[in-house]
Amino acid sequence: MTTSVEPAPENQTTGVQQSLSTAAARNLATTTKTPPQMQGISSRWLLKVLPWVQVGGGTFRVNRRLTHTLGNGRVEFLSTGAEVQVIPAELTELPLLHGCEDAEALQALAGACEQRDLTPGDVIVEAGSPAEYAVLVAHGKIRRLVPGAYDQEAELGVLADGDFTGDQALGSPEAGVWEHTLKAATSGTVLLLPRRAVQEAADRFPGLRAHLHSRSTAVPRQRNAHGEADIGLSSGHQGEAELPAAFADYDPAPREYELSVAQTVLKVHSRVADLYNEPMNQVEEQLRLTVEALRERQEHELMNNREFGLLHNADLGQRLHTRTGPPTPDDMDELLAAVWKEPSVILAHPKSIAAFGRECSRRGLYPSPVELMGRSVTAWRGVPVLPCNKIPVSAAGTSSILAMRTGEKAQGVVGLHRTGIPDEYQPSLSVRFMGINEKAVISYLVSAYYSAAVLVPDALGILEDVEVGQ
Image (tube, rainbow, N blue to C red):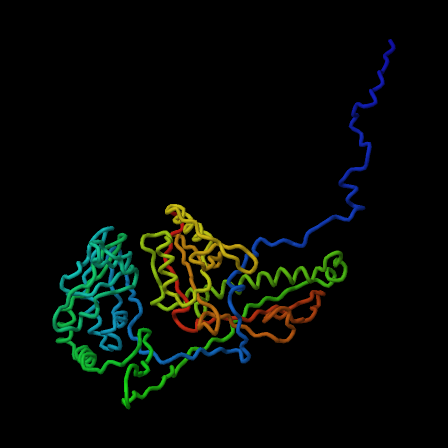
C-alpha cells in the first residue's frame, strides 16, 4: 500500500523560525535608555523658597531685643485610665505661678484640680459669670465666644491640648467675671483649678505665700505687645517738654544655631567605574542619586529636627487650631493673620491641601493660582500654598500647615549653609575622595551642611491637628 504526502501550502506556518528574533537582534543594537529613575525625589519646595544665609564660622547667632514674657507655655498632663492629672511642675507655666519653687504647694494645687469630661456643645463657663477658677485644657477643643454687636456670638479663637485661660483671677482677692464663654467644640477633658484652692494653699505653704506676695507687690515692667522691653517715647507735646530717656535692651543669651550635617559614604567598584561608563558615567549617576537622597533628608531635617526643625521651633503663641477639624478658609485666614507681616508661603502635606480644596469646594470658593518660579501653583489670599511631603500625617489622620515669612530683611525664616567648602559639588555639599580599599572599591564621602533659623517668633505660624481624612 502506497501513501502520498501532500505538500504544505507555502503560507502555512510549520513552527520553524524563519527570521532573526528581536531578542537576538538587540545584542547587535544600541538600546535607547534613560538615566536611573528615583521615585523618592520630590519637589522640595522648602529648599527652593528659603533664602540661604552664608554661615562662615559654622554658627549663626540670632540677636533679639530683651523680652519679659513669662509663663506663656502649655501645661502637660498625666492620665491613668480615664483619670487625668496635671503635672505639678507644669503649673509654673501659669504666669501667676511662674518661678514658684515650692514643690509641696504645687503638688497640693495639682491635687485640688477638678476634672470635667465634655461632650460637643457643653458650656464650661458663661460670659459674665464669676471667675472662680482657671480652666486647663487636657484634651479636646474649646471655643471662646463673646457676644457680638448684632446679637450673634463672635468667636475669639480655639483652645486645645495644653492651653489654659482664667488664670489671671487666681491671685485676686475678689473674683472677677468671665469676659467670654467657653463651649466645647469636640469631646474632651478639662481641669478646673479653683481660686479658693490657691488661697488655701497660700495659707498652708509659706513658700507659695511669699511668691504670691512678691507677684502682687512687684512693679510691672513696661513692655510692648510682643513682650519686649518698652522704649519710652513722647509725641504730640509742645514747647520744652521733658523727653523720656530710653534705650533698646538686648537679650543677654541669644540663641545660636550650629550647622547640622547629613552624610553617607558612596562606594563604587573600580571595575564598574573603568569599564561600564558608556554611554552614561556610572560614578556620576551613583553620585546624582546619592545627592538627591541627601537633599531629601535635608528637607526632612529642616522640617522635623527637634533642635532646629520648623515644626518644633514655632513659638507656642503662634500655634493655632482648626475650629472643627479639616482646614477651612476661616482657619487659613487665622493662620495668615498670625504671620500678617508680608507672609511669603504656606507649606502643607498634599493630603492637607486636598482637604483644604474640599472645604473650598463645599463653600463654592475657587482659589486663584499664582505664578512662582515659572510655575502655576495653588494660592490663598495671594500666598502660594506649596506641597511638602516631609510634614508628617499622624495615624489618626491629622497633620500641620505652616505659614511663614522668609528673608533676613523681613525678619523671617532663613536657611543656613556654608559655601566654598573643600571638594564642593553643590552649594554646601561636598564629595570627598576617601581612597580605594584592598577589594578595589572606591569610596567617596558625601556631606551636606545646613540648618534653619526663625529670626522673630511671628515669622512662623502653624495650624495644628488638621484633619485630612474627612
